[in-house]
Image 1 (cartoon, rainbow, N blue to C red):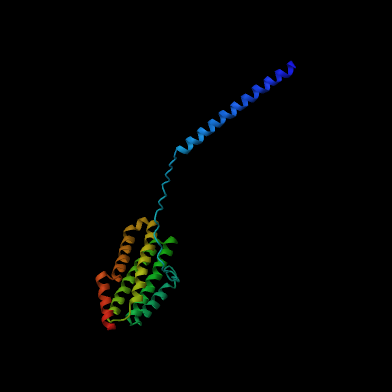
Image 2: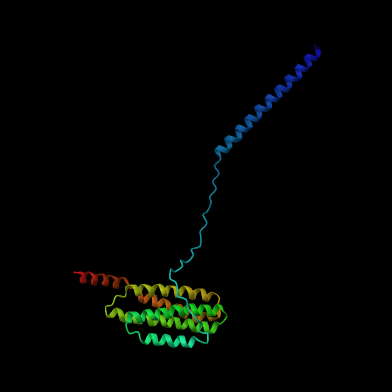
Length: 213
């Protein structure tokens, strides 16, 4: 009997201790949950600002063919001159010159990438001169009231693409910065020439309305 009483007392103490422990843990958990609910954690995530990348001009240069360092290139030059001489229509002539300009910008880049810097710069210079001549012929066509809308659009896109390519070339040919920057300026002038101002656009709309009436 005495043994049973001792065991009961021990069990009672153990039970009370466990109950007290559970109660204390309950109070602690409740306190933690209340504190968490009342505490507002405000994490401000600063959105990453992406560096805007220039949009690539959707204009593709034709394949340049044989390059100026090829022994047959003088024959190609002679062919181009004859082709241009026989073209009398200003629209067609402008298109020919634009073709020559676009081919030479690609040829100049290929030469520079192939280690022939001086010849590449010379070829790029010729490309911009051809582009300028293309504008002159386009303006002549416009003066004779020929349809030059599509031609002007091509010239503007070509000028933008020329500038884009020249800027890329400038990055790895810093020794030729002055020459390339002059070419970039030439391409920009071409673009500004073919893009009408607001007043010119309004005048063109008025003339088109008068013609329709």
